[in-house]
Image (cartoon, rainbow, N blue to C red; front, side):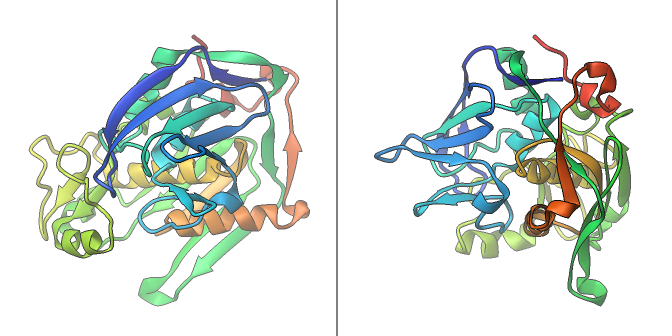
Length: 306
């Protein structure tokens, strides 16, 4: 099972969900063992952000890379798409603080990556295999939230949400996705981020959600969904939380061989979880697979080469 990068450069333009600023995005091929590297090209000199668990700083409403006083925000949807298509090595150039939100899901990034083409490289893909359960918990009672990684020969996620909102309560609250049998591109990638009108003013006062609108998010008032086209999936809310979690987990640097289970988790808790895994070598091991046949079925799904 070999590492993968892009066949050619691809570009896109959009706005930041939280900054509201226009941003140009350029995805470029990278050599084997480079990993995923974001670059702010609008600062002098440009600043590189090699993705790692320890590079994440602010996790309010997004996962944000921080280095030398410079930031790259809202990386999780692109990271999720990179995982979904098995991309190990890539340069991501940005001329603003935030990855563009596009339509609020990972679908546009999947399209861009497929347009660029995904190619194998002359180096084995590296995986992080979970050897024993690792769990992070916060709060008690109604404030309880937790996330856990456990040994599993593949990659599956089980997520439960609890927002107490009529529109969300009418949809699926819990979902388990085993990517050995479920397609990321078909079943997860189109799930959009969501928010509530009553929170908008408070978020914008702290510099968040300034670019959010009905074109890039599911928006709800106190009772209903305001988007005229409704939901893309019957359980789109919990599917988006799974999409986010995949992007947050991929920040660890390699695909995870294991099972993720969570209740009301978010970007901050997900980052604490992968840091806790890496904090003790007994929690995991680095593995490679000499052939596709030896590789868990999940890592062959959606990874067709261009």
